[in-house]
Length: 258
Ligand SMILES: C[S@@+](CC[C@H](N)C(=O)[O-])C[C@H]1O[C@@H](n2cnc3c(N)ncnc32)[C@H](O)[C@@H]1O
Image 1 (cartoon, protein in one colour):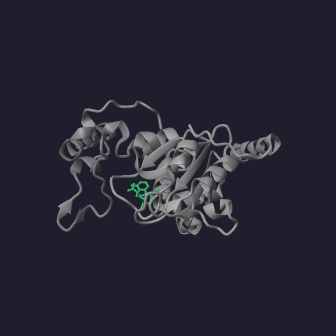
Image 2: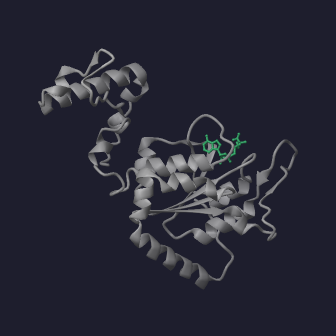
Image 3: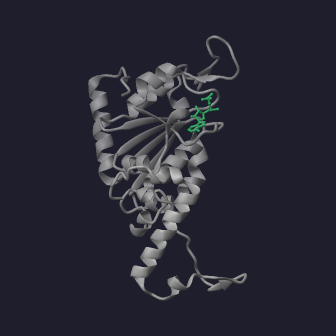
């Protein structure tokens, strides 16, 4: 659990917490993203399902520049690594100050980083139950370890590869989490059919035309017998999972409703 608290007077902190609670009373999920490139999220947040959820007030995402919390007032938030080596390191102070200012008692501050716990569908479902996420996006060679110890509650990786900065990782996390926030998707059924639900991959889907490039839609999908269709789809899910991701089959289902 991040321990750093802003050295501002108690009253200011209490006022910030009240404002935060009022804000989260309307949006079901409130996300602050801290990075050096706040505009990188603009297009992503304006379009499609997330854009609609934001316009409808179900989701609130505020992309903020870490430079607002730069200690020198010149916007400098990085410095050379102690001990030498390539690249620059994000300083601890702006990150700690930013998180302390944005936090309310129920916030979860997450640092996106390649050495964090691997992001999964189960985590996405869990995080959708939170009301306020603070996503910290690193750049250059990463973040001063003391900020990780003091300001961060969880560290999450979106995969075993290295990105140039954490904004794309934050976008991935927001997208995957938001799908589980009630009201964001049109039909809740589409979550039930997703890959990784009950540790299975999804089944093959078809739409018109019935024959394309001499390949036919399976007859069973045309008959209208929904019990048989469900059984066929489950069989396809099992087979596809066995062939492509046998590691999922041995896992325990977390049993959570979406
Ligand atoms: C170039 S990376 C730093 C990598 C760091 N030197 C290392 O090897 O762990 C810069 C930033 O991109 C983000 N990042 C890179 N890969 C990521 C991943 N797989 N998952 C989440 N964030 C990632 C992190 O925020 C990180 O601080």
